[in-house]
Amino acid sequence: MAPLPAASQRERSQGEPFRGVSAGVMEVTGRPGSGVTSTLLSFLAAPSQSSPVAYVDVRGAVSPVAAMELGCDLERVAFVNAPEPEQWGRAVGYLLDGVPAVAAEVPRRVPAATLRAICARARARARLLVLAPLDDRIPSGLTTGHLALEATSWSGVTGGRGHLTERRVRAALSGKLARGITMEGWLTLPSLEWEVPEETRVLAVAR
Picture 1 (cartoon, one colour):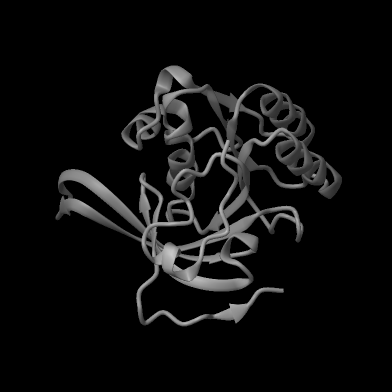
Picture 2: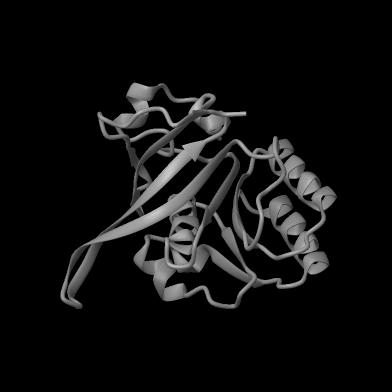
């Protein structure tokens, strides 16, 4: 399994660093409607073509239809409802033992010790784990990268009519995956192609 690559700035501008991702821990955050659920499902699309994967649903709102539209093979996607912190920790731990890719909403009040154990298990088993906390952030140092989603745009729909062909999410990428910098760019769903505009400047040096 290929780990999350440490892509160069030139590679990121040409569609990296998410292409071919099959292992690592990612954090995805954003306000409601910014595309968090769609991004999580997009991370499951490629691995679901050949292996079982899982989506841990805390809010009870994820749609299998949306998963199918984003390229997931529904015959290989398990949707698991785990709204309580203790239940969530057990469920994600069991799933990481059995499937190569897990996308999980993170309920409020999950202890930091539980998150550390879950992330360590994902790394030890070379799994892909994509986390979307419902509040706060994942503790520092546990993830390979952080995608902060900011705005979305759609292609193929005009005036509420038409067929949705592509969704682009304005985002900021930071963490180890971004090699110590914070970069703004556009993430295309469900392909996960990452585009950094030429005029984009480095926003900040990561802590």
